[in-house]
Length: 124
Image (tube, rainbow, N blue to C red; front, side, top):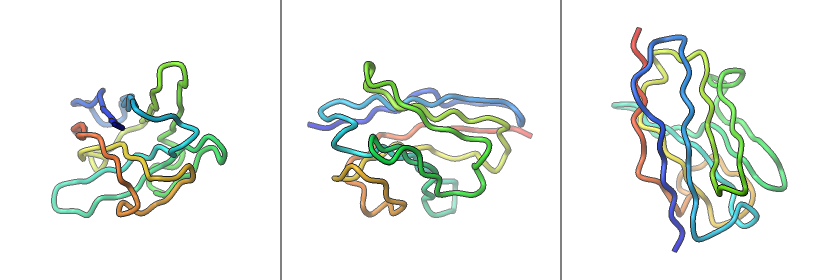
């Protein structure tokens, strides 16, 4: 059974940083890309960034380019989302997800595995 568990959310002031973790079990990064999405209150879920063992990193959201980065630690089966220069508009529930395939996709309907989500709140 594939499971994704996020951690690391919390409350941070604008301009601060947070690192989210997504610990993956039941599969490997060779078989599945790992992606980060977020959903703010009243808004649709938004694809942010993806990491694939073969294609590397793919950004979906221009709003996070230059501020967010994704990395993986294969030994720990964990993918990280490093978020810097946080803004109040980054406030959302953040999810890691995986499609059935190894390559990245920006579409949430292509994801079949989801973590439970972790709340990130950025105060002004």
